[in-house]
Length: 359
Image: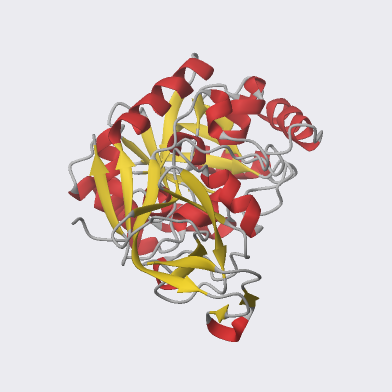
């Protein structure tokens, strides 16, 4: 028997999703975002599966170094930039691009003595108000970067959307207009579109797109599914039944005795819990997929296991495979039941979950 719980990752799905994203944005290069351990799919797994991406976006230098050590030679971009001046030589050594979004990062570049210049992506705060230089700061920062011998020319330009996952929200168009007006006629590559921008705002695609969650077959929009856009779920989170129990009406189950059966039934115990990253706050009724049907979670999710109501006539047995989400049960739907977003579910899996790359 294979180890459980495990996240089964489809190489073919990842490759198909990259192909589909190229179809959606045919005039753009693809910066595949693989931060947070490849959105829970395994950093090196994903990079290997989509090695024909034009580049990879990461949050931290440690992630970028792991890719270089794993033999990845493609363009790498640190989406949060560098936090320590002592890291800049590593960017030179390993040919890693960096975002500059704060005065402290600009000063580090100006004060360093590097053996070669670094490729910089200047981040504009066009309305997200989280990272980036404001429009009123842009010209001064741009000129300082242009004059800095540690910065490779031309400077590339980027921004990030606040509400692209709300297709009717006008802020995204306002951000695009502000950014495009600011950087008009400047040299260098441009990138605006995250997954939501790529799927719902085609006018934002430009030189590079930065798909994250969409690469994994998941929609960034609440109430939507990746399959609606020709994407394929790349992860199936599965475990096994470790017990099947007769359960009488009036009996409760689990910590706090919060759920009580209203009629005789059978309960299944699944070997997964919040110690594996399955949310403790999953409410009663959250579905799992077992033997061709949905069955509901009942009682509290505990550290190592959860319980499901199999029904009085169930014939399920110990060892049967349970899918927590995947092709039969979309992670977007599970996220809606739990009151969160699919991003959180796939990225919060703990090291106890075996990541199993499959063809």
